Picture 1 (tube, helix red, strand yellow):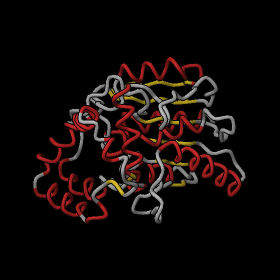
Picture 2: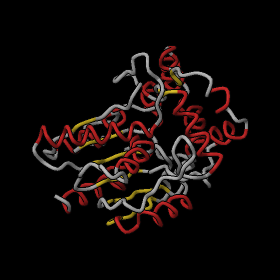
Picture 3: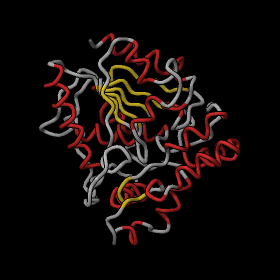
Length: 289
């Protein structure tokens, strides 16, 4: 079982709640072999001096990780991803040398951004923030400056304010445990590369699911059995964009569920995900064993 986190996130997202409400713990307690991946550049993986990469390069990392786990366990794994983790996974699973997995579980996949409503992405897109960011290859995010601790402390003392801010980025969120806002924001946001953010800004402006040079990804070869989960209140993985994604990979989708009331981070942070998401995830896993 391989789990891949989203943008500006880390493997901590899969174990950030209690043993009974975090997907990583739930899978481990169900006696699955669980591998938590960390994307390039975050606090756990690091990037060394090289920040010249985007989520397109991380697709190659996912391919390598799947091959590694396959060899180490002598089994064909299941891949579960959230947000940007889905983005890179879909790219990897569409390539000629695609990794082999039994099932791909996509939680709030972000691909086409034609209808995204995130104020942050919209503002950066409108202001062409990708132009100045393109001039540097450095870390993008607060962790290198210790601001994650500041956010964590602030959100611990004023959880309602933090929840309001996160809702503006990801969608109106009424399902997060306010008493844990300090925990969530002590781990998110983490670090990515400026080039990765440039890639996202360009896609937000074009609305297309395309590589760094602007060429749309060819999804016609995507044929991995997929369980697709989306949220009705998600600003990043908007319903209309999910419908467009389904139009491209629908032949491979074996299960689809729209979770009413769910915003983008609910799929990994909401304690209610046990009931509304993870229960069905486990059913799909068992069905594809």
